[in-house]
Image 1 (cartoon, rainbow, N blue to C red):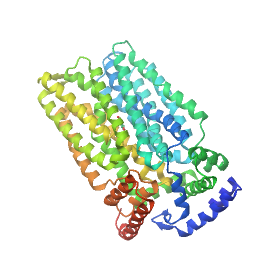
Image 2: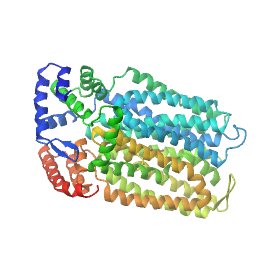
Image 3: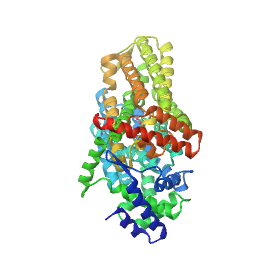
Length: 567
Ligand SMILES: O[C@H]1[C@H](O)[C@@H](O)[C@H](O)[C@@H](O)[C@H]1O
């Protein structure tokens, strides 16, 4: 059934009649670029839809953002409590945990998250965001119950693995859902709300962990508390409407219109009709009679369309940078590191790591849409590399060697202990303002037809990196020394700086279809910076329009080169 005939079903009103004629003209005027149908900017449909996304987020959007961020909170809490739990478990499982077991327990969550982050993306494109999100709540609770009851390291590992399934789904869907709902000018900040929930969750887990540190089996209470947020989220989502996209895919046009009206309270019914047509059109833009055929064609489209491939390189590249810079080594093992360096209350000291991460994510929240994602990443990687070098130097002088599970300190901890704390805080702060949150803006780089799939690739890269770091960090400390380990992270961060400088365009304040333009015909870094500057300065629509037209012309000229080169 055609897009238009389907949408006529939704309503008989005049608005849709005009929608139908506008849309058919859209199809006539559109130019096809490597599989992407791009609407001419003269086109009234696209202009009208653009105005719909201006303005502040509505109450429903804010409520959904808040409730969706519970997933971020659980991601943070569940990855955060492990630092204190590893110290607090002691010999509760009969004998003290070996470094190998500690790594397995930690890595199990990343491993579970990796599995679902790969599978949940295409799924969420097909069955909708809400049911998949609610399913993750069940996994969180089941994983926590297994851990609370665990009497052996392997049961604990199993519980962490199941919990990881929930973490993977939540980490994928929350930023995706929020960036789809957010108006362009607020998108950066609203996605950072989810990052604040992650880092806040980590901080709270650290604080509760430190508080219950000396309580026998206190770590089981810490794990048990993790069941509260998923239960609340499950109940709340039960009463919330499905997304318009999902309702349209099921042919429920009336309901979709009513949800859209709440998301965009100032939009006319004509605009709502246009939006429904647009979503319907996108839903049918990936061919295929069955779910699997659609997934297959989506995968083909994401690799074959040059702008999609660039989006993949950038989003996966940034997620790789976020993990391979080594931050989570501190997040997961700061308790263990500070214990090795000789702090008697290691768990309490490691709150410094989580606290600094949270506070500087808050700084990012206030500046991301003003300073811009690109500049934040460049500053972030420069400072991170410097503090990592300082860490490497401090560890050289503190001179730790390992015998079995015991770390022996040979150097002077009075001098170098505080240097390590300062270097770690500096590293964490510079990470949190850039690398810690910009990669989660990933969904903005993909067109809606393959957004879930693209977010899956990027989130899976994140969890693969997290898995590698969490399962090798303690072994690296032993085998290549702490100095060698931090020097390696510093080297990776320098390479990351170069990658960002050469490839990552400025995407702040741009509408989602402008992001697609930027990624067509090259990475268009200079053009992206000009466009973002124009938007930020609030220049007239006509100036902006001129810049976009210029960019399109340029892209069309490059299209030929593009199709002959691989990317
Ligand atoms: O953005 C988050 C945040 O920075 C967390 O602190 C970190 O543990 C996660 O791995 C990362 O994805």
